[in-house]
Amino acid sequence: MDLVHCLVLSLGLFLLGLWGIFLNRRNLLVMLMSIELLLLAVNLNLLFFAAYLDDQVGQIFSLLVLTVAAAESAIGLALLVVYFRVRGTLAVEFIHLLKG
Image (cartoon, rainbow, N blue to C red; front, side, top):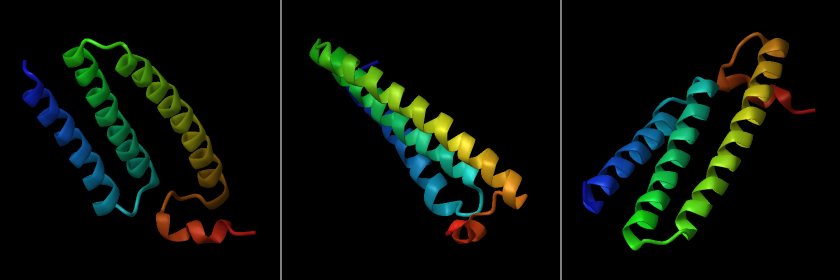
């Protein structure tokens, strides 16, 4: 598999993540998963270019992106659980009610 095919795969994942964020504004869980797809696409780009250029820096940045994605996912899911317990729904329209 050459670099162009890898970049097309990464572009497809990135566009799928953007599509999930912009076209689905009703469910927070789907928006969180779309953000994870965006981070996965960036991570794949880092790995593909690290392999193509025979460089280790891209792999190190890839580990950092994975760490940030895991932390973001854990905190986001914890906030969603608390929000669901308080409001009983995950609808985006009612988030403005969280203001103090």
